[in-house]
Length: 150
Image (cartoon, rainbow, N blue to C red; front, top):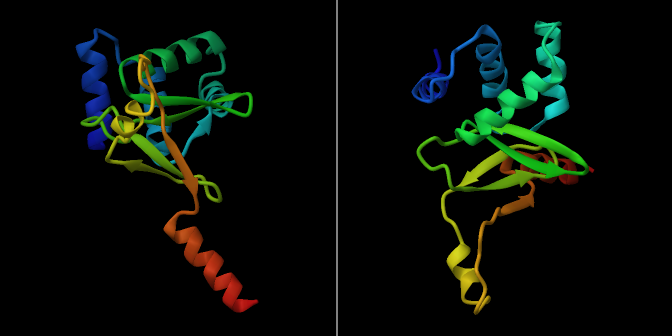
């Protein structure tokens, strides 16, 4: 079993959640999305293909439980909720670079929040999420090659 899956299973067990075949299948599917977001509706479709009798509520409840335990990251975009598997169990607080071409997600190691605090005197920050968008190295290289070819 993949070490990230082993970590997830250990977290579920530590929190007294059974490793059902449905939860295992959900983890197996989501672990393939460590570097890309996927629409929750696609996760729902996948799970209902594997388990025809599985309700939408059960799928969404498990996704919410997984997020609460730090196994998943959720975000809203264009009127839909997207999910990805936690890319770093050791650094749960982190930010991302997201390729606007291929959708690849890369973890950023540093948090620039301190740079913003000074600009907000008297404010109380209760949370934040930072994502930087652009082209990843692969897409930048492909784009440069395309420009040269043209």
